[in-house]
Amino acid sequence: MTRISNLLAWASIAGCLVSAAPLFAAETGQSLAGVWWATSYNPSMKAYLVGGGDIPLNDAGKKKYAENQSGLTNGTIVDRARKYCTPDGLPRSLATPYPFQIIDAPPGQMTWLYEQNKMIRGIAMNKPLDPLEKLQILPFWNGHSAGRWEGDTLVIQSGGFNESTFADATGLPHSDELQTTERVRKINGGKQLEDVITIHDPVYYTRDWQARFVYDNHTGMRMMEYICGEQHRDISGIKGINEARAANAARTRRQ
Amino acid sequence: MFSMNSLLRLGGVLAGIASSVAAGFALAADQPAPRFANGTPDFSSHNMGWASDGIEFLPMPGDKYVPVTSDPQHPYCGNRRLPKCNFQNLPPIGDTANPILQPWAAEQMRKTNAQILGGKIAFEAMGRCWPGGIPGMMLFTAEPAFFLQTPEEVTILYSRGPNVRHVFMNKPHSKNPKPTWLGESVGHYEGDELVIDTIGLSDKTFVDFYHTPHTEKLHVVERYKLLDGGKRMQGIAEFDDPGTFTTRWRALHYYIRRDTPISESEPICAENNSANYFHEDEWPIPQSNAPDF
Image (cartoon, rainbow over all chains, first blue to last red; front, side, top):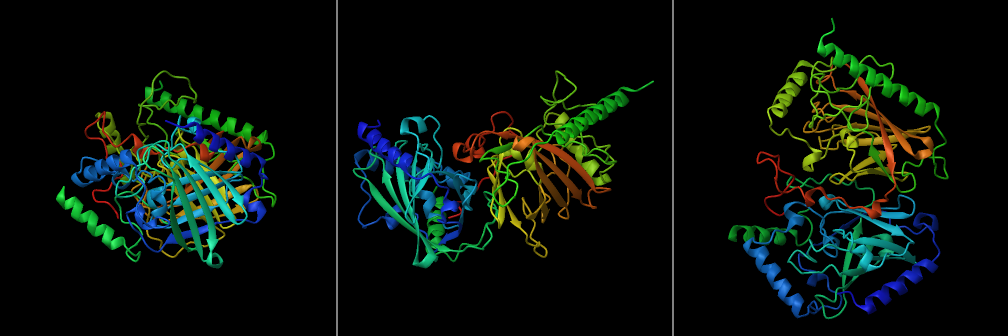
């Protein structure tokens, strides 16, 4: 299903990456290292949509979304990310109400560690991302990622996702042709982190769309264990979390 | 006349000596380890992981007390260990006669052994996607662990699970940390060694694959050192838990560098293990009956 235009786009991106100065983030003085934590949560990606409006699902996307929503409601589809704590995948993991840590290590890589579900994203720095066809041979839950700096903004390109995740907690779909570009930077003098993700998935969407996430800086706070089904960090202070929990409980009762 | 038990025990001792001699040669033939610009040894070894060389702890040369090994009547024969053999007991059956064990610990292990030999499933934490204990998690051979080093923290990523362990550098322990699966770890460097001090460990875990138990008072000090120019890593762990062990004891272990960066692997234990294909009495993997949010 991959189109020639996609291939050309990736080839162009790869060319830019090869010509970029191959410097390790920490050596350049650029760093997003620290602990970051959202102040609010919404199960729907629509709440994070840049520009508002509706998420641009095509007919196949609307059909798949309806199937997912129905299955999640009546229990015929299991949300493995919540039942077994498998990775949320992108862009759903960006909405996590738990903190995450960015580490400028090991050399040549940036590592994002999400407390929720113990998700690990290894982002190869200053290396071109392999073509989608190659990444799809071994698809990852959180995709394969490569990053580079553009000024003070970290640009992360990801592809090679498996189809075991949803794009959000309501069952928004994505295909294995999903490719994302994140532009991540500190804002408000470093007090916050902004991650704007562009979703490219022609299988289910009429056009590319963007979602924006903002996290507060909690550097110095210790990350905690997260064992599926056990008591976790108190996140009741996160705006929207109690509503989401109430909705989940109501859905469980209906099943 | 030697009994069969005595012969088997002698075989185990000889194997231990052979391993110790091999360890001595490795140390003697050591090459400079890779380092960061500030001189700190680079345990990431160029973004690569460390896979355990075998599932058993080795005895420390010269130590009177040694780690639990396999029951002489049910010897464990690892794929890469001497003596060569054509049989294998899995899960391994621990030697409950090891003098480091307090009576209750030996009795608990005897019950576990009987359960296994009776064809039942004993709780294998890492086999069922639970954290494998400290430093038991470093005994998993199939999937490597990665070390991320910053001045403030050494973060160990265990591919099995995965599990993420945070080692806070040059910091004291908290007073009475709440027991958790991975405990509270603080660390520092001593020359070429990374020293990790861990307390606050939940008694849900074992210290090894032989189901050797421990209490929440377990105190583990691990010392990691690079060997052969960073191609191998040595780990020495010291265990102190008077509630479980009759004495402090130490264990030696080696790790082999795996040439796969973190960014090129994503093992998710729960991906294939949620079903109980082989045993209906299999332990469940971690799961939530109600969504967290």
